[in-house]
Image 1 (tube, one colour):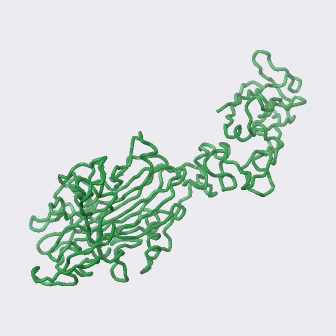
Image 2: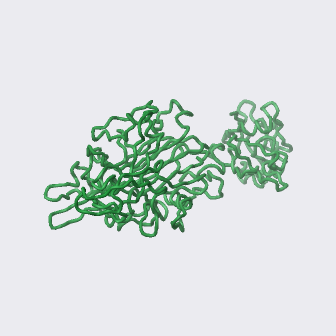
Image 3: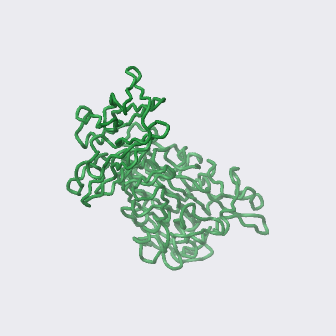
Length: 557
């Protein structure tokens, strides 16, 4: 970057003004300093304009500068001189015109250049040369000055630094997101620091899985301009289960089990819904951003079930089962769904591949997965969203050796680790962002790690099933009316719990396309067969892009 410094000399003060010229303009005009117009452009005592080399006429209104100091001592009040503060080579080109500077009553030159017209962002194809480069730009001749992939003809409002002071022009374009509070129209929408609300008027419709997936994405804060596609599905391939379908008897041995093939999609009708878009959950849980949040559940989202003796819809059986995501499980030791380190499980391992070769892919019950393909803004280096996981399994099945541990995962496919191999904060090797810093996956087994805090601090039934067994419970007020809160009875108190709001972060490459898979499922076995009761739910909200990389994973922020 070159600098052109003008020494403007007033009556008794030396005022140095260094105007930073940008390489963008030089590259576009094909100029270097030797090709600039270095003439002062003054006559009759005029002050030199910005296009001059910085030399001052030897005669300014009859007064000569000191040969050693260069100080001009006076000007005649009322006299006017031509001035221009635009980039070199733009005066009298296109709309750009010089102005005048007036000598003030005290014999000093005024600071304002009255009437000058400086370059403006080019308006494509209107027959006017707004940026004063000698031509009206069209889609055929437009040049991407700042190299961000957008020209004036694509709606770029900042190709040159003077068009967006304080910002890097390459980070300001229609493909960017508006960074809150920076005072810049980053996405060239015409609104500075605009707040996008994506979830107005959303209502899910039976049998419209594609439309419902888009609405779930918007409810969690992902707006249209970033969504390439959204899809609802099971967690993997549908599988058959050996289960006492639609049977309820007292003795397990009386059940007649059959092989039942899973439904192909997550259950959703007018009465039983495994996903939802809502303005409120229970009595006290409200969106963190916008008007709605997204909900995924292993049962009917507003009526979680516990230990049931029936494989029925009323008992939480959503009639679905599938494999888990194969790319993820093939990076798990021995092809097994991981146990949390806080419950004695192994720490995450990098470098594992094809661990399921020759083995059966694990299957799970009542899975729901939302897959989002997103276009990353040109100025984004990361994203975050908020999640609130809650489970009927808490506290009974925490660290249970039978793997009663409902799961939530957030798998990110991004080129970040390859693009930045030496980055301080690399994305997880197994793609799962829904883990704390110790590698504990999001589920009830997070409790010993201290992340189950939305639970009653003093609730137990005759000393059994204490909701605060690990000592981290703060309050379950936010769970009131959800079915996961503590409830009193004549024998004492029984209750369940949740994590409270957690933040999940992932890093991305500006401008790339990413895939984010969000899935929840049931695990375990009960008397009637695979566990479809003991429900869990996750609420998703507050998605936003971030301008800098952060430590990926899930935790309190």
